[in-house]
Image (cartoon, rainbow over all chains, first blue to last red; front, top):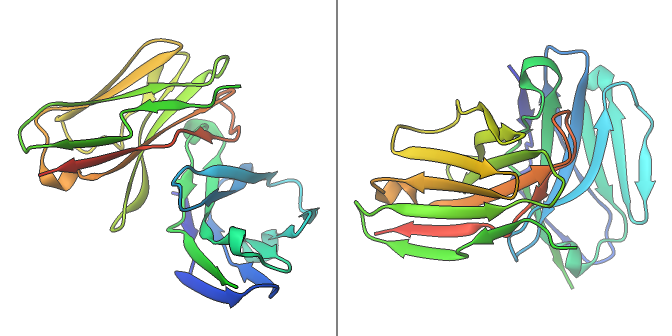
Length: 116
Length: 114
């Protein structure tokens, strides 16, 4: 069985602060995929990143960066110099190969509020 | 390019009525997913299709829920009869293939059953 835990329900920061959103996952598969999605107030979920289990390189995209550590089963997301437009609910998701291929299990989400 | 299109955006109905939610996936995408989002249960996968064939419907809550995909460009999720506990946001998503590709979500249908 697969599981995704986002322990932080809500985070509030002031603009320009850095913020890290945690994601811990559980899976028995050796091949799996991790995702982050953003759900702004408008409601539509937007894909941010996908990482497979064999690629532990960290990734940076502008103000966004992701830290994947298999040893701790974590795939954390950092926003540097946060902005008000970053306010949203952020979801971490896991998808396994094999019989569950194509299914994604989502965490409960972390609501990020960036105050001006 | 058009994204995933869902209709209606909002639906208010009375308990016992039939509700039909519609989805048009992105052209060329082979997989289609129906999710339900509530405060209590978060995002739940209800059913997904690959090449118009239902692959896994284990998330469908009960027999009142049914989903079809008659062709590659259209899917429906039907609830009959609807109940207040069905109130939620229902998302449709599509992806390029069967193998863990990223999901493209529609704007969702906000369903309220009174």
